[in-house]
Length: 65
Image 1 (cartoon, rainbow, N blue to C red):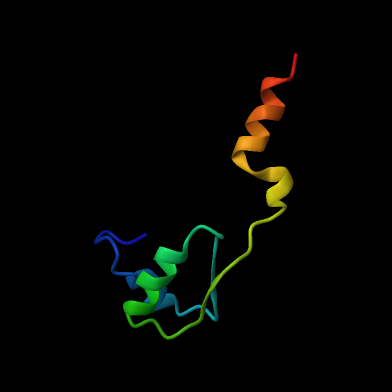
Image 2 (tube, rainbow, N blue to C red):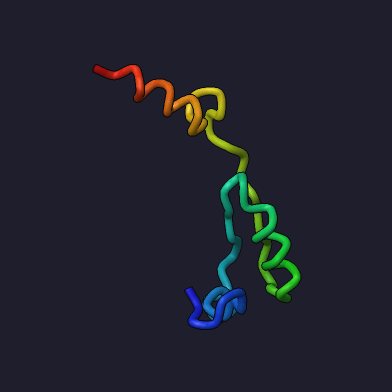
């Protein structure tokens, strides 16, 4: 991370080939793109949302003995 928030200096210095973000990080993707980065930013799909959503996992763990 950067000392100064939302500057993305670390990413600009490292210049990765691509940055992958979680499915709920669309706002961060937009912020990165507005910052003038020169690499693609990809938002991934959620992984097994019908099984691994927080609300579903909470229900499963509440039923444990």
